[in-house]
Length: 343
Image (cartoon, rainbow, N blue to C red; front, side, top):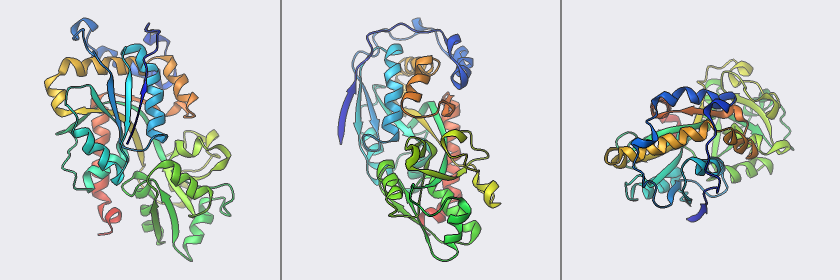
């Protein structure tokens, strides 16, 4: 477990929602749902916000949470203390989060795809909706399959051809993951054997592909984009590739191979204890108001792009959107339970 803190910027002024651009501008349409500032408790937050990340420091969740917090401090004037609790595909982090005081000062920054799958498949005793409510979605991105720069495979078809003769080894960050579902569903559709190798995080997973310990890696697409020429994207588990410039103009997997695998995405979202949601609605409303202001701030676009993430993946969504994403992932986990558990 490691901890670190981001301090609030000294500049606390807000920029108008009307100055937001691109995907972030769409979030302004949700501003009619916000309560006026005067309705909130004036003393919240009175201390640091505690941010729990159920993966390791330096990974994709850390990157995205820090990009958000770097602007969030303009709209929620406090400091943000980060704690990292990797292990058991995220279960360690969620169990630690549930042990925290449910006072709306502790939040979890979720990777909805793998973590909701984990909650569904593992015996955690933690239920989405009953124990945790996801109150704001920030980003969404599709899964992809990619290889390192020295791989002999340069197309998805070439990789599949390998599978006609032997099992394909695939590095994944954790077994319960949308990317894992994509590769297992691909193997099932084409009659080839896929062997998933979990590495416990995006960075070691990427290194396994780059050093060719495995044939390929399957991860959220941003992981490969930030690697630049150290990765070659072969296919995207989506209806279309919305970031062709950063992904070698890789095709959609279904279009390349004639399969019918569902689109596989994962969204980042902020979650809060259900008990805090019920007991402190004014605090939760203040959090949501400041989160939506952050998403509508042009500085957030700059922060995301500065972290190496294409701004096309900014995907603001309120509680109803975030919870619908979680529920869709639960249904996906149930559909592919046998593949993911080997049962």
